[in-house]
Image (cartoon, rainbow, N blue to C red; front, side, top):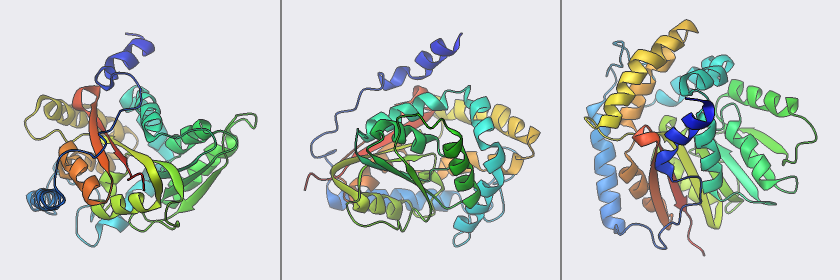
Length: 306
């Protein structure tokens, strides 16, 4: 299978990269039931995976990564540590297909020429750089992350790109997804790539995204999909992490850091839970799309028109 065929294969469940049509008023879930069901399910997930829950190799990743009150600092340390090999491992482990899913996320965010876009948990800058192309030279992009070494890598990549690229300037900001350092209604589009799962307070992060987006703007949240224990995609995902991802990371001296993935995915809200949490946060509509036959997923949420 060549690269093009592989991309088509793993993008099959996205129906291409067309912009999804969100329901005008979102799924039919009342505010009361959304709040109650979402909080109960997230609370159950936390109780089911208390600190000490083990990953595929008998560990739960770096110390403190799942301990209340310590998780933010532990995860910041984790991402600072993996920064030097992050892009290379992404290419190896996804066969380069993470680029396909990121292109879809940028399109689904609604980023367009001349707009202002935000990439939260920007990591090494992949999505921010794609947003910069989408909004063009007359637009602007901000990339935010809590890991300084990731931001340093992102800024270096930005500087190394050819000057003739038709892309917006990018401002790199160190900050917290739970308390974004921006004014209300500052951005026309937003993305979060493989980051929401690592935020200590997901509802707070969604509320902040809602706050900084302009009326009618959208956010696309790309991440591993928690399809539920016992589903075929969950079984395959677990197998791949245990037999492919962690062994590959071990070659780079990053075994514990990548053993973090499996328990972090199991604690991550399911697609339906993400939709409800987005509605709780004040988005008008929210739909979660499964990608790569349920291995990945993308939440697309839109703010009210006014």
